[in-house]
Image (cartoon, rainbow, N blue to C red; front, side):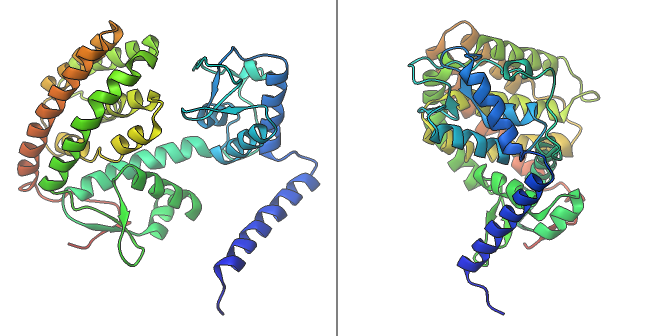
Amino acid sequence: MHYSAKSLCSDKRFGRKKALAKQRASGKKPNFEVIKDALKAALERGAFPEGQVILERPIAEIFNTSRAPVRRALAELHEEGKLFKFEGRGYKTDNSDIILREDIRPETLGLDDKAQTGAPSESHIIDDVHRATKRSTSIAMTFGQFRIRSEKHSQHFGVSRTISREILGKLMDEGLVGKDSTGHWITGPLTARDVKQDFETRRLLEPYSLETCGPLIPVELLEQMKLRLQEALSQTPEDKNPSLLETIEADLHQLCHSFNPNRKIAKFINQSLTPLVVGLVFSDAVRASVEKPGLREHLAIIELLIAGKHSEASEHLHDHLLNAETRALERMKSLSVIPEPSLPSYLVKIS
């Protein structure tokens, strides 16, 4: 039997409406309504400081739920004129020129602790599965081209096909996976040419972006980045922490740029980060010492940002990217003679 795209979409909408009706019939409010009501009440009583930015993830964590109901709640509040769009990510609580990114606490929303909406806690599951999938695909792409079997992926992690597709879509946005001509998910191969082109893109965009958004990054956040760098620099090959190194790379090359009001620049940077996987894979594949030069370069940039020397930080970042490209290309040569590691069953080598 043939189903049109229109009929399939209608079926999905019917399924959502049916689930919503069932939830209401049980006497329990849908998750998005619980979240919307709490935010609306907080807005009406002036619980937020002027210019407060509202993002999906912090609200999802407070309510112990996924981002989908939060997204709907925020969209409806925006339609009702309670929240406002601006050039950055998320919404603002008012239409002023002030942009404030203070942490939102449960008590701000009139909650004593994390709210319980009755929904499964998907946000942390998605983050964990995303992190594990990113690591596996990063390793795979340096050893050739692999097909990612989405059904096997969802079975491997015990998550729904919807969550599996959401995670693979996020990795596509990050430039780590793609789709072939038949619509199958694939990753790799990562070539020296890819690395050179991505570094060229990053040298053009990252220094400019950092100088632009540097003044917008909270000093408290930069201090946390500095502490992570100092911890990593004190580690030996025996106690090095791969997760810490991943966080450190994301701090400078993703988190800092997330404060850029120009979302297109931040997006292009985010899609040109595949060279970062080379260092992480190399670190996993061999018992190498922690990359001190790269970490020291990171530390110098963060310290300049803390000191408010944004132009100097931008110049240091440009030099860091030049050095990082040289290191990445050297490591790719080393990886070419290392045996291919064992990979999860959802990754099938093509070439």
